[in-house]
Image (cartoon, rainbow, N blue to C red):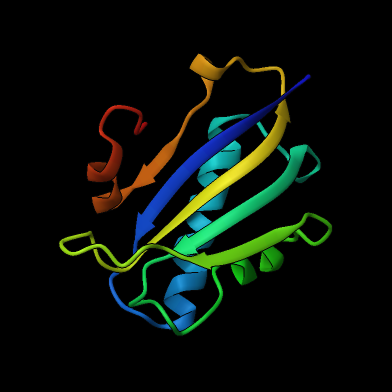
Amino acid sequence: MAVRAVRGAVQLERDEPGHMDEQVGELLTAVMERNGLTAGDLISVWFTATPDLRSAFPAAAARRLGITDVPLICAQEMDVTGAMPRVVRILAHVETGLGRAALAHVYLGAAAALRKDIAQ
């Protein structure tokens, strides 16, 4: 098994706790399913949110999915002029037998425009 990093992002329609929980949960689930991962494969997960998202911590969605014994951290994304608004990004460190080229990085909805080169 190797340690790999898997990325993903989702753009929220609005800054509301329930909506964030739903969308971040969908993102985490997609990352795990598309890469054949279980919670036991997770080493840590970084979450970033654009400065316009203030209603909830994105990591709380992971806890609600049952990811309770994995280190999680939230940070604020840089406030860059013209950047896509209301975006939550993840960087998950995982143990997997997949090679780097085989990893599925997941960019849901409008967030697919952020990384057209690697979005699945």
